[in-house]
Length: 289
Length: 252
Image 1 (cartoon, each protein chain N blue to C red):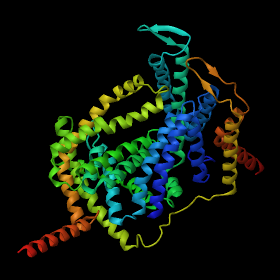
Image 2: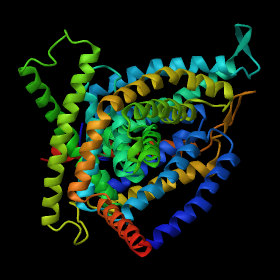
Image 3: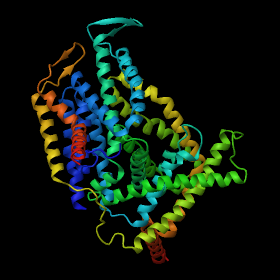
Image 4: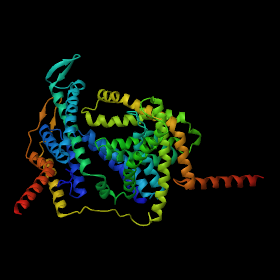
């Protein structure tokens, strides 16, 4: 799904949300908070990607188990030894700690997956175009050139194939590398020649004479102010309520969660809640017809 | 310009020490956040210098081409794990100077992640590739005598295995580890070593085969269109020559 309710908000709202979500995820190591985080991130990722989202989640599960299994091998602190590996204790505390660390990584990757889907390059440029005009123009040009250069590279390779060079499986590694360098060389010429034409054309149209304007299709509406205020309140609530402390080695010490948990949950579920509200509104307006 | 200088001073004297101080004071798992903040803070002066200079259109487009070339070069050689990207970034630094090398590396890494995925590794990749290009520029820029493909190839290999690769591994270390111990660091760096070796070899081979043609192309571009301070260089050359001539005449 491309256009869920949260993606349609102003880029600033999106950016601040991900900043908060990823920042808090990198710091809080309380298992219950982490579980909640996983539900929020996973849910939103699935909402964004649909059925295709399961492939990333399925790929992350082995990573989770691998990382949490490795930790006790390197970290032998902890009171309860489960068994011994090469004469070193494999402790329950270290295993739990490893699970939390691995979980944090998995959740962070899920949030970054959501970030990539929501904060597309045009939104990024809309956010930072005013602050760093040259760099964002550079970014826009690169993003356009990468696909076009890739296409050109394929064209050059095809042209080489038609004269019988670089064809098929008969080539060894050395031939492949040499052929690749030839293609790269031709591609460089082509791209640099184009760059001068582009630059002259930019100058002819008055680049650098005045402040660059960028297209804006995003409006900073009342909804965005409201959302940002809510985010700040929820995160402050989580911070002030405490109960997020947890330490694992040498001994297990996990604080009992306070009402901050509810606040954190509300923050994490914001995109999902927005989506839910939109769906309900749609249903009721359809029913009214 | 002055504003930028003030900002840089504040950044270096206040923000970075403050981040480090907070990072050591807070209990819990702050390694990743502290280190990533540091990385971003270190990169800011480079970007600010580029931005306040107001680069010309020609410079901007050429840098964009070099970035895109570096990213697109992955598809050119059809051998898995053979990435000429770093070599192209370094060559840009050698031809156009350290700053251009940094911008190409950092923005190139950021842009390529729009096609793959942004992740906790993004700032680290930007930093590693940017500094790779920067360092190559510092060492080889404006030293025509050193532009020997074999030398460049050796440099590329060594700098990746010793510098760029370990910087990328630092990201893994700070994301995955809980207790920062030498044992953990050795495990992570050891796991990354074979990958870095591969990466370095790819860079070395690309440098060996591609540095000469690419450098001559970039030099030609610089000279023909007067880009990237080529005009200033030319003027300096003229001034030097005229000084020498005056000295010669006075002596005679």
